[in-house]
Length: 349
Image 1 (cartoon, one colour):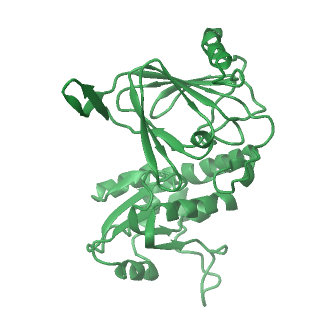
Image 2 (image 1 turned 120 degrees about the vertical axis):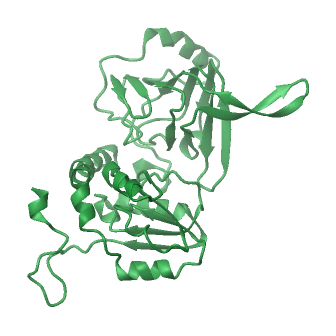
């Protein structure tokens, strides 16, 4: 199965890799298994005890210079131990991050095979930064140093073993088997894609027109932050909390490209990202806000994961403010029968 993604071209064998799940649907195998041309290479790894058995899933990815892949941990529920990364073409630097903040970088030379097992498989996230040059060590007769390595076209072969049953590691934070099954996760992703992401892309302009006034208690929270604090607005919408409070350094992100474009037209510092996978280092921000965002996630587990991710990027001793919608949206106070002013049926049709 061949797929073109925003950052790369991929082809799957055995099972299609789902990038939302970081795993596969085990009950939906592909008609074509791993190509026969790969068997001699894999057989050598098994014969030398680097692998316990032959893999049954393969993802082939073509990276152009400047393309990368976000940091991630492959699904515990979908895959067993030992993930093999075969690199062909241009060398690349792969970045690893531990939940406790430790980081490491590893050069993957052409025709090298990296096997992730144990903690490097289940705990450390791995990813490739989107850039055209990598900073690497240089070894020559005049001594050691660093230099820039220009990227070329790289082809990666990622071999995985499909897990029989569920993962038993019991890690409530890292293991998707412990939180909820792949079927439930896939259903949640489909629900959000259809009824949240697609809707916001369609109504971005009208949505922005109705969001112009800052909520008083959010503004009060921003006023209370120390001058020079670095603030993250997670799910910034049209950026209404990024337009004032000039004493703060402000950065926002949103899942909606349409809303990000509106923010950029207003001269705001924003990027497109997911609240469940924020592209920032641990402890990067002095303060974080998440206003009317978390209720868009369709399961309790996903909402809790988003809160954990928000706390991850918050420095020790930092401050966070989270707002979610109430269940009932028809009227407040004395106006019980008055519809919410945020609803504009005429423009939505």
